[in-house]
Length: 144
Image (cartoon, rainbow, N blue to C red; front, side, top):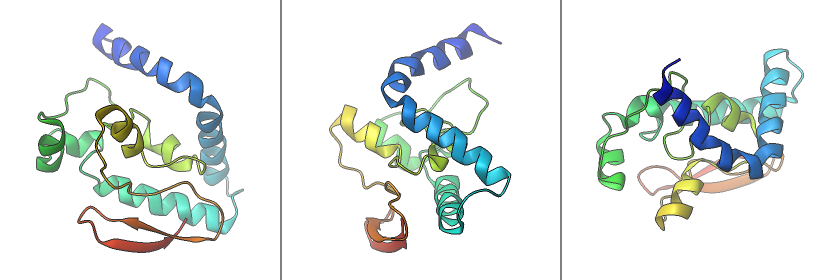
């Protein structure tokens, strides 16, 4: 592994330590998802989140060339990491989306940049319906 990759992962440790319970929860839920042990509503919520993240201009695959990312951050995303992750919070998308007690990684970006970008999804509290905004600012109703 290249030193630059190791450095990128090492920079995530201070952010991860205070969120260890959410990280462990995401890992456990991800395993439960793979083996069919999640409740149906939780399974659907994780899938819904992953679909949102797949099309998000702020995931590492899209942020490298996304005009929206460029406009918000004033630069293109550059990373040596090979995993599919959020360019704002740094979390692997597979784990972040499975952590049902977590909000979208944009929350971290907003906290360090003083931006107010709308979250793509929020903490899941069961079968409640929440309103969040899509990338155009339109209100979108969904479970979660």
